[in-house]
Image (cartoon, rainbow, N blue to C red; front, side):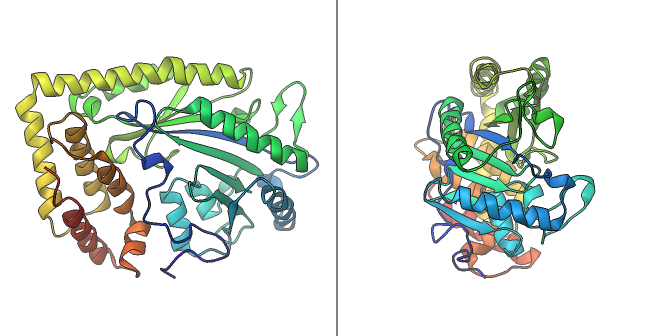
Length: 367
């Protein structure tokens, strides 16, 4: 189905509206695309997802759905009955993980029909709650730009409402109990998606990795764990939660590591403009020229070229251009969104052709 997502859940009719992480607003949004806080929770007296059988997972799904529906105006998706296209659309919008879309459990067992769900706040999509991913509940809040503190406050509020309905697995000694030991404690994962083309072009991206390693943080790609940094988009997140409060984790991310990376990237951009201006101008306008004239283009190539155009707009090498359409295209060139825009399933060759057409149309007035 390629109209609005099915009434079993989904995104409704506004699928062409960029989601929260692409609004291009908020603090430091020239470098920080979005901030995300995720809380992992499990129910007391219920087997954790990797150890539960199908019947037990279905029981947890039913319990959690009833509780989630009391949180607020959320749209529910039965992920195990959703079409593959719908699942891909939700992953592309950063509303659920690729693991949740596939239904794979620890050890590679399971599949698409494993009982699991997703709740999404509409119309802003700032809050999403995965049920029966690695943990019974994964509460996720997104904010545009650098806004981890605000995201944490919203996640805690949703968590408190759920805890009024559900009894969590909690240890006075260890904190919240989770399927993966690295999440035990607060169960909180702080993540920031950053656009780092300057560091990439100067060959200094290892600065980010070293700074992250110094503070036991992970650097991942566009879709998180196991993914590549397509379009110079990197996710930086904490790896462990045991022994640290949410406020300590928040301070490490929002006041220490992320500002350092922002400074690195802004310095790299200044170097490119001031010391390598003609070379950078050439790369930026070659990217724009390819996007405005190509007849066939892959997702990865489109993302890499859009990254350069975004750099050009933000450094004013491409004058008087609005960043929002560029941000939106980072989403619309993805496979499921492309097919949703076109209105039908596409072959690989058709996707490359339609992607190029959409890029030509939407970038016609840029530069």
